[in-house]
Length: 202
Image (cartoon, rainbow, N blue to C red; front, top):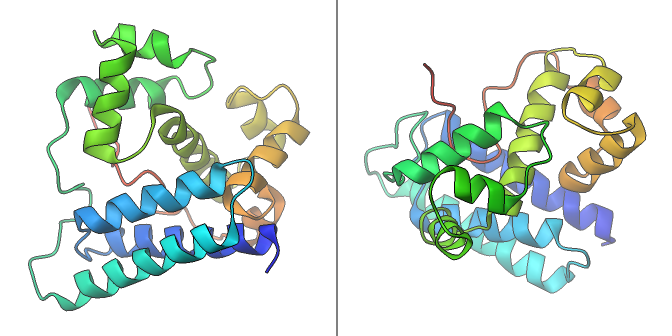
């Protein structure tokens, strides 16, 4: 299995997880941790096949365990944890300014946190880093806009990419497919989130 196939397998697993989430399948802490570890591995520069295989296997085991547990399903739109208000503010800022080039330090300062505390909150509550989460936010927004039929050039420029080619490379790196293929494959807006954190409505 080559790297692009590994990325595609990991992406399919993540999409399956978030679709299950949207449909009310309970998302356990183990599933969420495994999901973010898979995403971390996919985004890393040189993912090892065995690492991704092992993490995808853990993710699938956690998904099967959650779907057969018979517990109360996590309501769609709920992450199953109460996030720190500063973390919620940071996530809202990332979503509202998805095309901006602000640094992680600037976002941390905006919500009143030191860099170390900011990273600790992401690690402790979402099992990921701010950079990986922000990439997820950008992918989520790109997928939403592309699935709604927006022109790829418009999406690229709106999300702060200097050229459509840069956007295409970013999209393919994070999803395993090009935005044009994704656009052809989608007919309706997708209700899922990549990050697993629903948007807060005013």
